[in-house]
Structures are given as C-alpha cells and as structure tokens.
Image 1: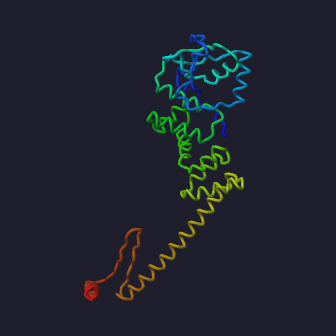
Image 2 (image 1 turned 30 degrees about the vertical axis):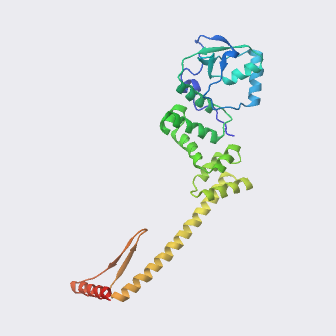
Length: 286
C-alpha cells in the first residue's frame, strides 16, 4: 500500500463547502435521518481506524460536524461517513451537521475526491478514481491535476497503470508489485513479456533497480539482433548490386526502404545511356 497523505490540498480547498467551517451554523440531527452519499464508491472502511475513531467519539463526541444535504427522506451525507458510522457504533443518537445545497454531480465529485484522501489507497485505486473523475466530468488530465491538487506528470503516471495487463494491476493492488515496478513494466511494449517479467519479479522478490537492469539487458540484446539482421540485409543488397553491375557494366545502387525501394544506374554520357536503354529493351523483349 502507498501512503497517500491527502492530495496536496484538503477536501475543503479542492471543493469549497465540502467541509464545515468554524463560523457555520450546526444542527443536531438524528442518526436515523442520515443516509450515506449514494455516489460514494467506497464500500469498505479500515476496521482499526474506525475503532480508533469510535473510542475518540465515546470520549470527546463528534468534534467535526458532518456536511449533509436535504433529501426526500431525511439527509444525505456529503462528507463524514466515517464519523457517521463511528457515532452509530459509539451509541450516539444525534450528531452535529452543517446543511448545504449540492447537486447530484457535485455529490459524485465530492465522493470521488474524498475517496482519494484516504491513506490506504493502492496505486490502482488512485488511478481508477482519476479515470472516473475524467470520465464523469469530461475533463482533461491537465484539468484533473488542478482539481486534485497534483502535478500533470503525477496524474499521467497513475493513469498509465490502467494500460497494464489485468494480472499486473492485481499484483500492484495487492502490493506484490510496487508503483516503481509498474512504471518500469510500462516501458515494455509486449504484454506477454510484461507478464513474464512481473512473474519473475514476484518470484524472486526483485527490486525496481533489478527489473530495470533486466529490461535494459533485453533492449540491448534486441538492438544487437536488429543490427545483426540489418548487417545481413546490407550484405545481401551489396551482393545484388555486384550482380547488376557485372550484368550492365556500370555502377548500380540499391536503395531499400521498409515498404519500397529503388535501383539507380549510373551513366557518364549520352552514349552510355543509350547503351543501357538498349540492354533494357532487349531484356524486356526476351
């Protein structure tokens, strides 16, 4: 797991009004009237952290008011679901709240951003949250980086993790592969090779540095093979040139490309050109 201590800014700074301020008017609302944010993607809460919060609430009460919005039946929690759950477990009947007016779209955005404030998120969960924000609100990576208070390269690096094979994403989620391993594997184009390297890393508990060395060695080996292949092809072209030069008694150059090429015949006089044309005509006539 990675430590994700905020996003450089608190939820209140990223989304004004999503947290209660000291000057806000608070109301005591029955827990029975409160409902979780329907757009909250987070379903599981850290048991230990929740137990610590329950103990704190039993001793000091709910210090920070929840932010809610009025709904058809009671209120929906905008921010503070952990406090709501802990208060319930602590045996409270009411909690302090600040009522605000938010649209469904704002509720969804707040839920996603609040989810990103968690400290126990793994890199894939962060990447998925970024992707959801971009998809739901049709924003660019640049706009997202501003919204979550992170740099553009940071956002890009996380989103690129979602291009890795599913098996590797699962390893990153479990922590058997780190963010560093994942970034190194992103530099390998072949998915099958990515999977083989990931399996080797997990099996040998290799460091990011070791993985980078493996990839570097593979790239060097690949370049050597390509050079050897290229040298062999050049030798073959040279042989063809020699055959043509011997046949036409003039210098010949073969220019070979990936999809097409050309053959160049040199001549030094009009008479030499006429000789070559005559040879071509005879060749085609035969």
